[in-house]
Length: 269
Image (spheres, helix red, strand yellow):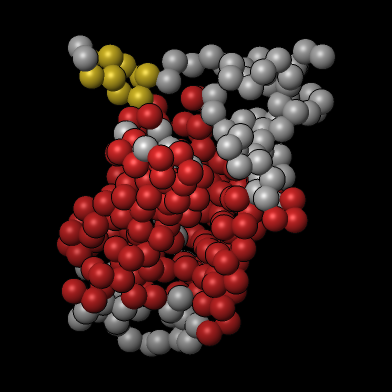
């Protein structure tokens, strides 16, 4: 059976500058961070203010380190532990790919905690405003996965199925696009609506909880269409690693929303 929609064979490398290759995946990270950074500077000053724009500028480096170090460490631990146990030096080969969202999220949460502690900011309040822009990066990241022809979906006969270059001859779900829509666009709309409601914004931790729970649900649904990682396959109760790692996110997110209490004043130092 031939797919109705042909996979657009886009070169993963955007441009070559001599020996330097700029890839779409790297560009997705850069664009997501820059847009999220500038957007967050507008959000932190909304009442109750949780930080200053200058503090957001200072936090960007912390966030980048949290994403890269946490994302790589998470991939090593969750998706390739046995491989890297026998060749631990390969964990440093970041140019070979391999990043985990859940690891990156943990890295950013740690960065938020340490930075807020240093600056005497509200951890939950600052986290709310960050979570309100994170889906921007998720959207561009999933689009980059699609362009790279990686993390494709399960075999399917839906009219929009595609044959991916590394996915064999069978038509598959373009699950990267499903996830870009759910984890990116839909989740972004939800958290933006919430963060612009003063009564919700005043309940510190609610927006962060909505993001965590929303992402967890979106990821678990998306994994129903995505092909499990070849080195792991299906795990406990037929769930994938992505689904198992998302369950705690849903639980923590629900807890944060339930315990969120309103404040009426600025929570900056």
